[in-house]
Amino acid sequence: MNRTSPLDLLDIDALHTQEELAIRAVVRQVVDEKVRPHVADWFERGEVPARLLAADFGKLGLLGMHLTGYGCAGASAVAYGMACLELEAGDSGVRSLVSVQGSLAMFAIWRFGSPAQKEKWLPGMAAGETIGCFGLTEPDHGSDPGGMTTRATREGAGWVLTGGKMWITNAPVADVAVVWARTADGIRGFLVPMDTPGVTAREISHKLSLRASSTGELVLDAVRLPADAMLPEAAGLKAPLSCLTEARFGIVWGSLGAARDCLHTAIAYAGDRTQFGRPIAGFQLTQGKLADMAVELQKGYLLAVHLGRAADAGRLTPEMVSAGKLNNVREALAIARTCRTILGANGISGEYPVLRHANNLESVLTYEGTTEIHQLVLGQKLTGLSAFA
Image (cartoon, rainbow, N blue to C red):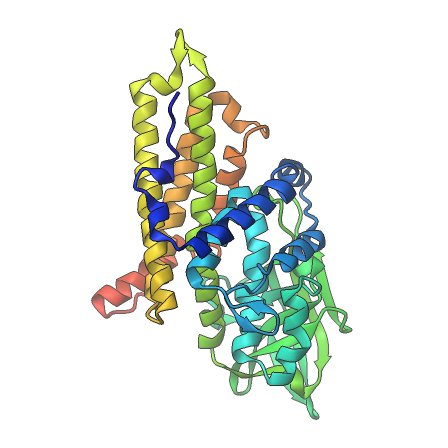
């Protein structure tokens, strides 16, 4: 059979530079070597060797790769997006490890930290020797981070933090947490070493999604910090929200990786699976599904490239990222579910990656802003009226 890869239908590689394609090839190779042979087992056991992966990714320059200085690669936004796509083609949890490290924890320090804070933390984080997490979401405040109850109060020259954060990727394995808390002067960010007395990280178990990811609850019980633990340039809710925009950009690309892996699997399976005396890839209903999915995958990719070029030109807005996250994750999940139908009963087997991707995408659909939140962001932009209050 003469098969064509879904992303080759529109000659999409022609949109990229040779450097971007070379970066993609390197990341794809490391995913093939370090992730694919093991990820089904990680998912089944609900464990992931986060520190080993971080070290491998650090050697390749994948951690904070779109940032400059302090050992960061200074790659383009498009190159970073392509890396996220390849990582999530392995598993959404693996891409989350890189996204939280680089686009949330490292970006917060890089953008809002003091020179001393940057020098202390960023080189080790870029190398994968130090792992960070990002503490914004709380048990009772997910889509409404402005309602956070975690408090930071002055005590002498320092601070005392009390509260809790929930669904924090990397928390159980992290060395430092970027924690957002309410102060007398508004919301501020703090760098909290995880070995500080009063800090507890509890692994969240029994997940049915993102099982190849370390997710935890942070408890802050009268945690005492020095004055220089506060990020000096971060004031108000706009600071953590700007970090979320960084992470959402990676999701715009990453979700396509999960969709592409599902579609590749479904095409190969349909070509090999024989029913009624012929491969099911030759049936009209199957081809209709494959064609529709390939079109949606390519549309999502073109959107991601457009946003990446806009980011590199300094024109990217939060609303543009919301449009990308809303569309691409929603379509990726639909692709994963449809691919599962092509695999039939085998679609639920861990031997194939399709239902693992579908389960993961259920979480990706929710984190960094739910579908409804992004709809309201776009609705406000279109109408000039806020529906949040």
